[in-house]
Length: 27
Image (cartoon, rainbow, N blue to C red; front, side, top):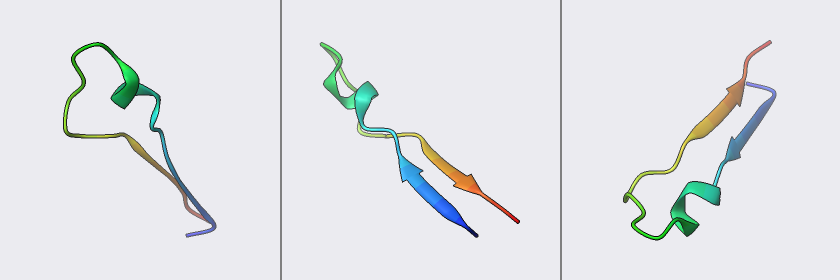
């Protein structure tokens, strides 16, 4: 794993889910 990012933008929607997408870069 060379990088890991949590996309918090979907949590700011009017009716957000409890989940947030996680993006992982594998080398």
